[in-house]
Structures are given as structure tokens and as C-alpha cells.
Length: 150
Image (cartoon, rainbow, N blue to C red; front, top):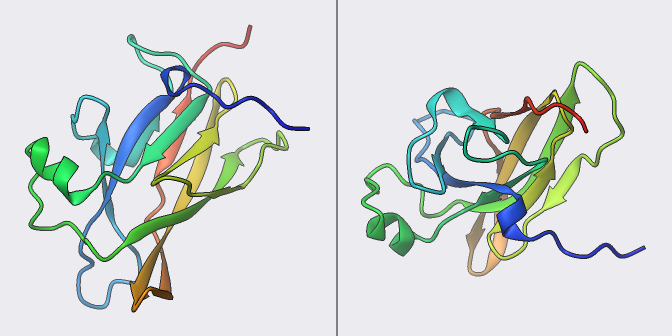
């Protein structure tokens, strides 16, 4: 059964920016920004706040130009890493929510049930000559939803 697309206005959106890995580092570290380009502390992404209350989090990899346009320091940006997919797990409870999220148009959407947390691993790719040559997992951000079910 096909479902109608979810309007971006009904989602909490964060920008995810891959950072250049330190030598020998096996994980892709990321910086996260809100829709207003405010930095996110401790990689804790919220789907609710005084300004919004949603059950979906959308992650978008901005272009290098968008980063520059919003005054983000691009010296540590890993411009060779492209958001490829994400894997999520609801923590402390099994609700049967989907776990695999492919990227489409530089973004992906993750559902988060009321009053739950989801661990999330982002997968980035590197390409050479137009072919994917490497997949890299991110350090594990967490999505929280403190909303009360209705």
C-alpha cells in the first residue's frame, strides 16, 4: 500500500554535515544543525521542543554552497562523504518501526514513536570515478521524542 508523502513542515529537520576523520578513525563524525542553523550539542536530536512537536525527523545533507551561505566553517567538512542511508533502532522497547532508511534527494526521514529514543547510524559513501568505493558508518547520534501519545 502506498502512503502519501509526509510534508516537510510536519517533520523536524536537521542538517547533517560529515567532518573530516582523524587519522586512523574508523567512524565518520558529524556536526548537526537545526533548521535555523544552530549547532546541536552532544548529537542529541529532538523531535519535540517549544517550537515543534513531530513524530518524524528528517536529516538533510546540505551542499557545500549552502554551508558557506549560512556561515558554517567548512574547513573541517568532509566534502568527499555523501549521505547514503541510515539504520535505526528504537531503544528500550520494540515497536516494529522500520530500521533501514535510504537517502533520496540528499535526505532521509526517520519515524520516532511518542516517548521513545532511537539510536541511529548514518552510512556515508565515498566514490571514485562515479563508483562507490567505500561505505563509512557515523558515530551514533540519538533521536528523542518526548511527546505524549494522543
